[in-house]
Image (cartoon, rainbow, N blue to C red):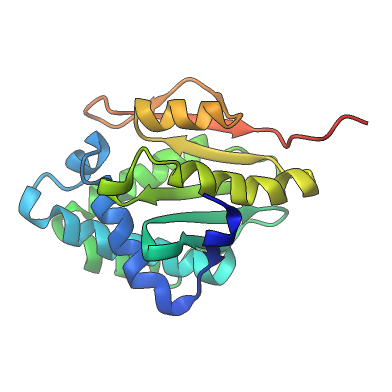
Length: 199
């Protein structure tokens, strides 16, 4: 898939991007821990992801592929830290209900393991389940990596499965020791230095 099929998204896209991520993340062990009720999981995840996506649309970069098959949510971490989403605690509680403490715990884990050096944070990467394994995620990575490489900016992410960890490794990310949810589910911090062309 060429970069021509990828475009930067705007505020009107927040909901469908959140729904695409929620749909794609249902199979993850982490989301089963976050929302144990299978019947409510996708709706809760979509509401929570919408907070993150709307924040990224305002302060970062959100890209989507043609046909809405894949999305990437990037947050720059350059210089001063980004503000937290407006009214975050109240909005998180409204979105997540009885599972709010679990999402808050995950936020704390992410914050405790986040690097301090300047970088762009790949907060979320998702591909529609029936289109996974067809190069869409890789195309989204290459799209923004081209900018990162041209501007000498590293990237950071937290891989939530062995499959995604291995995908990111193929794109130049170095894996660190995982941190874990209370049930033992791992997240792998991963860092990518920008690629520079040899002189």
